[in-house]
Length: 248
Image 1 (cartoon, rainbow, N blue to C red):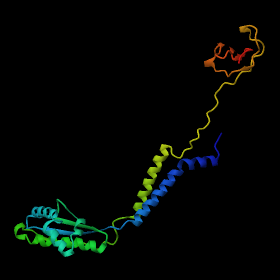
Image 2: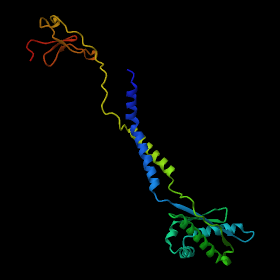
Image 3: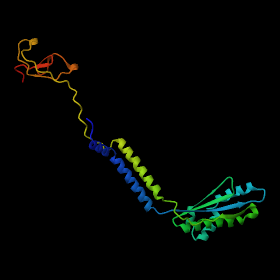
């Protein structure tokens, strides 16, 4: 029998309704996370190292060396004195390139203007400390590009958080559907494959001599056909059961 439109709709809702629900809940959770999380700002300043003419490799080597001491020692002390606290230096990182004598100073914070001020203070402290040792290093440092106030937070990004939440809900819903959650627990009735019962025998059962007529018949299964007597005293003849007079 061909299923009706209503039956097909109920089947789809029962099978994929949970998947859609979990996807929507994931999207809502991601959107709420993006809306409630404290914004994070990132500001970057760049310091360049200049060596003596004809010694470009020296400047690159010293740039990598200075990049390792930005958040420690005299550079950190000088920057903390300019900022009034050393707590902000915990959110400062540096990176250098093996090909160019440039040091990138990155500051992260929850206030855009203060984050830029931290990056600039660290960059200026590095320049002052590095130029104080020019006689030994034969290189000079200068601020290549000061940090500007970030116009927008780097995180969170509501569209991205919304997409991540929806994807997580979709994945969870897909696993739930594959696990069989939400399917009907009522098993469908198995089709009746029994062979129709033959009509009852009439007249005496001549195989076993005179006796009562057959009163009822059993379903016939080819693989279980036999002749003889059952444990209750019933006589089985072919496909019929003959009941003796004294069977209790």
